[in-house]
Length: 224
Ligand SMILES: Cc1cc2nc3c(=O)[nH]c(=O)nc-3n(C[C@H](O)[C@H](O)[C@H](O)COP(=O)(O)O)c2cc1C
Image (cartoon, rainbow, N blue to C red; front, side):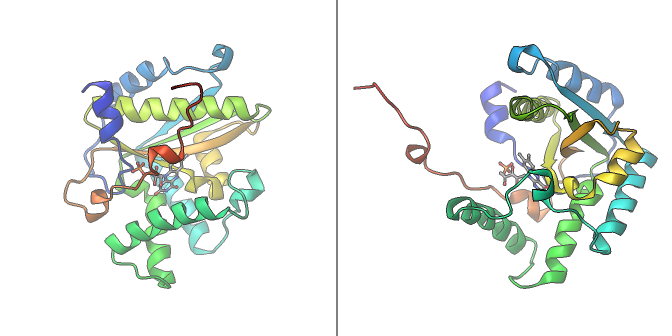
């Protein structure tokens, strides 16, 4: 797969087949992803990869917390703002409603939306979970590096016929994630990610999220 196809075809996949991903394949994806760029080549990322019993333990503990309504807020970690401006709010709602209407969750159906949200914590049935961290003292530049690293993993995965869903949802339930993965307390969780083979029959995998018109985001200067 060439790089342009990988970029065009990567989508967030929210239903995976149970087929395991060989550890050797994950190692190849992560080896190639070590080529991700970073400011002054600091390579600030760590990645924790889980499968089997560890993946299950994380899932069980986080689902228990989620069911008990014991999640932290994104803003507590300065991850997302408490209040979004209109344009960002509308885009968030847009993709959320598109997903929910595909899976049959109507507006106002709190139970249905909790059920769909909980799918995050089953790794959308993917056999492999990844968690990317950076040292806690690091600041915005390093978080940008971690973002590039995440995208590099997602594109590399496409090259191996695999799909992904990056997941900030885990930010709300970090304690079990840190405990089961042995993540040191001086690291910050940037994102989780589900990795596996997409279920081609799942309705949620037909979602193609919208994008803003290029003229609204690209600002050219000095061209005639
Ligand atoms: C850092 C990051 C965190 C995300 N967290 C979640 C998440 O917790 N759950 C989820 O279903 N999708 C999550 N997504 C996927 C976004 O919703 C998705 O990237 C966006 O809607 C664009 O769709 P696409 O990835 O299919 O192109 C996340 C994406 C990124 C980049």
